Length: 227
Image (tube, rainbow, N blue to C red; front, side):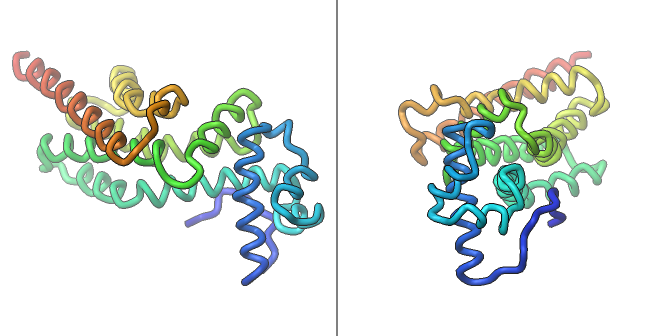
């Protein structure tokens, strides 16, 4: 993977790598609760159990540490969505692939997106981090948005456009794609997590998103066959 940030990261092995990982995991929690502006380097070091110069040694500065946290989230997004991205790219490159296959790929993309936003390590801290960072317009956030667009929004938009025989740049295609993804992003909000995101509940969410998506395209394709 091509690194998205220029990071201050000296070569390290063993204990050094463990220390760096511990600082990153702690920083995610601190930035989530305190925000980028509210978190101090001293506070970050104390929570991670390291001395203050360790932040500079591994990350250069508080901003460098925050960007490294964002990069770690982007890396997980890429690795989580990458297998499907390969399938989508291959399908879109083949003009003979039927709509049924494209629709199945779209449903799979949405299901993978559900598991991305509802699962994985520190999911609640990530939710809080995103919310606070949006308000503060924290550094590096634009690259998080770009990653989401590249790995989630754009493949979905191209699948929708292909099935509806329209340009991906068409405004209606963009709006329809936003609406489809909105079924998933609602579960990024804390209120949707109140009963607890058990594996069974996540599967239920995935099933509903698939059901809604299939119903939408059944209507759209029926309308298209009439005209």
